[in-house]
Image 1: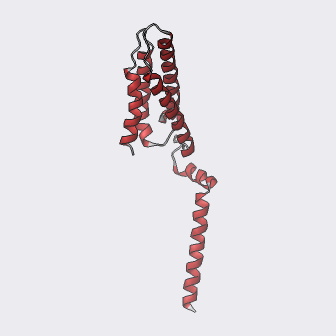
Image 2: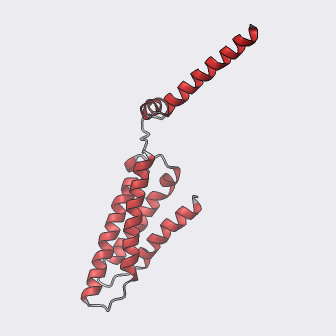
Length: 155
């Protein structure tokens, strides 16, 4: 009889743990737990939102790389269009990256906290260099490299 009580107690315990596990995985329960476990100034960003913003950033990087790959004669229409496309793309990148920045979006990703402010600064410098009468796209090329560098280091 004692053996049945031990098995019964174990079964009840396992059932209770299973219910807690399922309850803990629910999104509402997780949100409630975050209210208690994270400090008040900490804003949790859902992984799906982070991936969505990173996807938008990657799309702008592809546009930038394509714009930089074009060769045009100075003073041509293509040259002016290229400069405008590079500037617009850099502005879009800066806007998205600023939203990902820990201070603005409250992102909890440690690598974003460490590197996004520096990345936004690089994008700003690239935009300034590209806006000159005789534009320099060297820094714009380094913007794309900054993504590759950060993602290869932080994997």
